[in-house]
Length: 135
Image 1 (tube, rainbow, N blue to C red):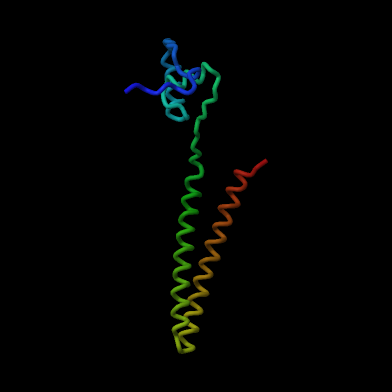
Image 2: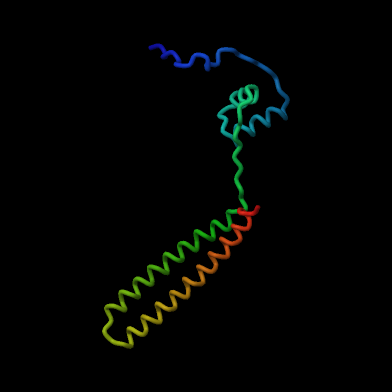
């Protein structure tokens, strides 16, 4: 079965251009393939020859530590919230005033932990905003 004809025949690659390049130039083309949006060395060369843009993607590793800490804080806040819900359930099911006082102090302690985590979170966000929102 034959292949269907292209709807845009003017965009088909019908001419072959062969060239030799130095090792340094070839390594640059390989870099464009590995870090950019080109799929092959030939595509990178075609884009350079035709003047098209090549997008190179950079990874900023300086954010790995703060982002990891943000993920940890999120998990800690979730765990504290679960604990608060459990203590609240025990509080509502308790009949004695001594037990209710104990559970309320327990909830107060959990809310203090939330306050500490939120303060830490705000410090991280403040540092990130200084880095990324500078003029």
